[in-house]
Image (tube, rainbow, N blue to C red; front, side, top):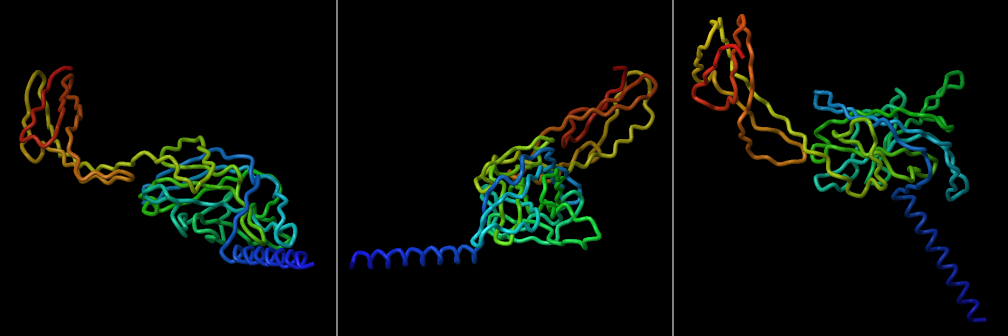
Length: 289
């Protein structure tokens, strides 16, 4: 009799503990996983030349999966797109909305949140009036979605890459694609690199190096036929290489010889200058090549 009472009390404590754990999980956020999509394709990365990049991926969304929540089957609300960005060590940045703009089949997001600190999810929960067609964000049937996002390069300077993961938004928690996400970097040229767990350090992207070179003002004027020399005094003989800026690599100073061939035709004569780098004088040889 005593053992039975003890057993009832123990089970009661266990059930109470599980309820507390579930309540705590709901407070801090929760993510489920399921087969949200059938794959990724057409990954892209475009430098816009204005301090931003546009990344893209095609997601083939499946039917909204049948997932049970705490009160039974969960209610599908909208499609979602998860973004993961990384610090210089490759660890996911915490509570970071890396994308400024996100579009799904040309329709922008209206809501974003960081349910868990490792990712940000973008979605659109606006349901238009019944007289208007619904947006692709709230389509629960299978369809192909072209996802594009604009990102400030400063936000990903330490690790110029992002992971993009298909997701569904429900009334309880986010459901992420169980196979992982698409890893997109400046190296991306059309294919998609699948990353099984976006919170694990991904392959480092290749360093992105930007050089600013100021070329001298070479005015060769009229060049006579035959073999002649033209001497350029400083500073017109020098290339000026500014301090390089790099992503993912540290360079304090870069000095190297430049090789440039400049051709100007004067009748059948050609002027060629080569290997120009901080030289006091540079002779240009003219003559038939």
